[in-house]
Length: 85
View 1 (cartoon, rainbow, N blue to C red):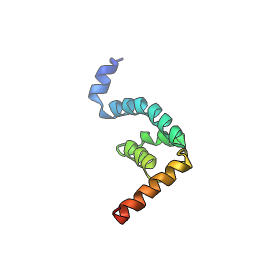
View 2: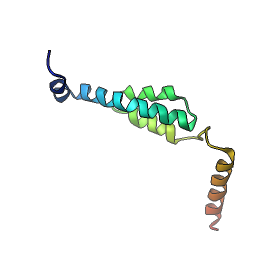
View 3: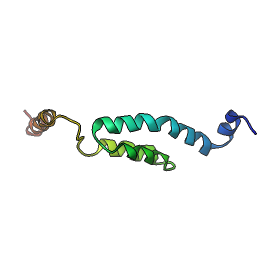
View 4: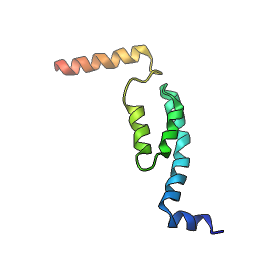
């Protein structure tokens, strides 16, 4: 059996899989904290585009965990910016 380092250096897919194993837990925690479905962190295992898909999912749309007063404050700031005040 080859040493793990040799396998990771010779196969880009193996090193990508290890990278995804390392980032799936932090993404799981991030999604849980912002109030989205944490199981979506498993999408990170989709080759090539997985991490980008998870981060786009986290970035787009409202974060249910945000306090309603904070959401209103942000909306008010956007309205002011649009009016140029």
